[in-house]
Image 1 (cartoon, rainbow, N blue to C red):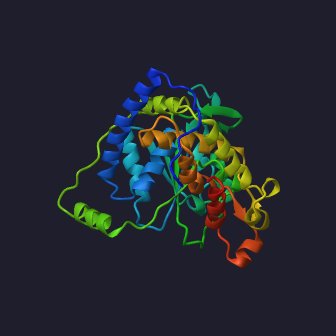
Image 2: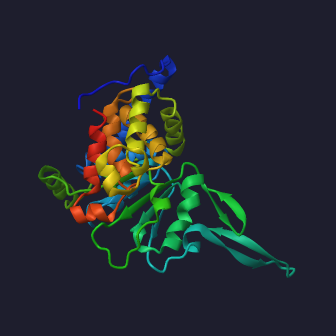
Length: 337
């Protein structure tokens, strides 16, 4: 697919151009600092930054030992944000994440309930091996991820801003795990596949991490800067061709509204409107990372797999015939050409 600029994007003001250039410089430094701890995996780093700049949550999927937890720890350092880690286990309860009310007794014998915040009250929440907790506990994050607040005892408590859930999942070991509810999967902006590094990157990592000293990353951003960047992303102009491509891609993945045979035959349910919203923001963030002011259809094509693969499900016919989601999404992307 050849690179194509957006058709007739809204005109950009000089202020936006200047802000985009400044943010691009700062994001380049952010990339450099993350690269001190995470070797290779450039696509993973870029998709992580796209998620954060878009104000979304991300699901990191990969086998153990690929640096998923290290990436989250590094992000907390370079972004200068408060982070908490929750190890999801089968016996984890919603109160262990959200917090609970405790009964206090004053000196005069008067009793009252006091809310004790849980680890969700942070800016970066690492949900490690999120699929090891029961669906009831996983669902405790639904309101937090969508609305930025939680309700405990009938009282709503706002979460710090910005708030991002960075969850990890092991795709191989399924014993003692629970599938993530569809409603929760839909709240993750990107599902990021973390794969094995190539030879050169693994060699660099091996030498850098087994020596006497490592060069630790330093803070290159802060919470206020990230909020400002997220606001700027929403002001980036988008052309009509990109909007049409996003709608065609998302609506084409729904069996009831597509003409694509592979979707009609093999997809049980397709992506909803939140996928289109996420794709719109993510394409803007990807363009900015690449030094461009306006996204192109190539951005839509590149981000289609991480945006769609956790928002679609195949039926029994697909499994029987060996059809996988990558095949379906590939056909949807081909339709953008």
